[in-house]
Image (cartoon, rainbow, N blue to C red):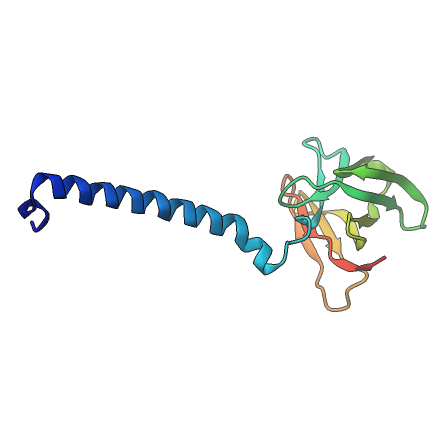
Length: 176
C-alpha cells in the first residue's frame, strides 16, 4: 500500500532497483555454487561402490552372476569374477581391465554349490573383495537359493526364492 502512495516516477525507479537486486542475488548464488567446492577442497572422482548380484534365469537352468557399480556406471581399472565348485575346481573366470562390470553364466547342473570370488580395483587404487557361497535346495516343492559368507564369522546364512536374486555390496578391503 505504501508503494502506491509514491508518484509514478518513484515507483518505476523502485521497481528497477528491485529487479536489479534480484539479478545480482542470482549471480551471487551462482558464483557461490561454483566456488564453494574449491573452499571445501575439490572432491575426488565420484565413486560407485560395487555390488555383487547372484540369481537364476527364468527356467532355473543358469546361475547368473554379475558385479558392477551399484548406483551409477563406474569404470573399474580391473575386475575379477571367479566361480569354483566345492572341490576348488574353477568353473568360470572373468578377468577384465578398464570395464564397468563383469558377469558369468553357469549351468546349474555343473555344480549344486558355487564358491564365488570377486575382486575389483578402482581408479584411486582401492580394492574391493568378497567371497560368497551359493547353493540350491528344495523346500516344500520350491527351489530355494542358499547364501553363505565364508569370510564372515557372525554373518548368518540367507535364502532367496527365485525369481528373487541376491545382492550385496562388495566392501572395500584396502589400497594398493
